[in-house]
Length: 435
Image (cartoon, rainbow, N blue to C red; front, side, top):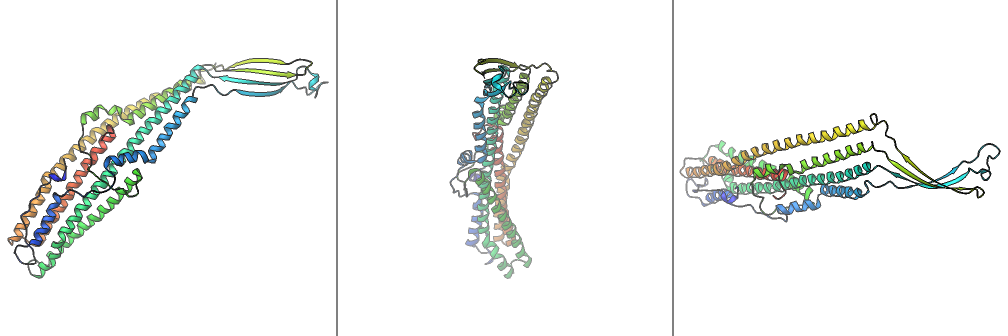
């Protein structure tokens, strides 16, 4: 769509100011070098292709590793949910006389004993089932949060790679333009000295040169920022980009059809499952919990030992003041989560349509830059060169035309980068992870 081989360039030659109006090979070479910016593909080097950068980030990004550990923790804790509590061992001294004629003499009283036993609490089946449901929901939430984080890391890594790729291309294109324009800038003072141009004409190339050098400083800074961002996600200290970017194509209908499978919405579904589990646990409070006890009492041998068995049961007799308010609160939370999921789904769908509209606009603007803006700048440079050779144009006008070619090239790269960047962001944010 925006491949560099698509650019058209035309040049008819130019004149040189050092020797008035005669064919000058040096200026023609400079012009050809400037015009060749539209044809030359960028020089690429470095170890990371687009897909390698995504793979490196998936394996190295601390955010992903942290979420994976959260999933591991939730899965490890799940088998303990719904299990019976640990049994309790108790030891007691019972019926020890502290007053009366047998005070302080445990062997003289038949009721005094050392009692040892175990007690086992048995929560209701509804409570244990709700706990298992809650543990499964926590695993689901952790997994969906890991998916969301993985998607966010992929998007950030992809955009950082593209930012570095296009910052490098812009900077290289501008370096070539500066090198090609250098002979023309050097020739401006000589043209003034020879009387071919007005003294003020020597100032115009200076202004254009400073503007391009300022642009280069900004591009170097942008390249450094993009490299630092890519290093953050891939773990590479000095990452370089290699290979082409992804093709800027989108299947809009597929994106709309698969929007319900987006990790952000699936995370809301997992949150709804957890809210349902909390509601079930609250309802389990209306079911009685049991505990059982087995004890052995050691007494004076004169009286014999004793064995005791007992049971306890909770009595949720006042559910309207205890359990029911909690059940109502958890039920309201579950409904709130579902309403928020619906709001998130609408917001995500609206954001997709807005992003697609922006993408179509930028795609059209990119095509106009490639097919209209850059060819027009190339045509102007050719016409100004011919006019200069015929004595109808000044050197500053030729320099301005060649500077406009460099600016048109950079503008075209800016629009191409915007289209590719939006394509990747939309595809990875709303669609599958295959781009």
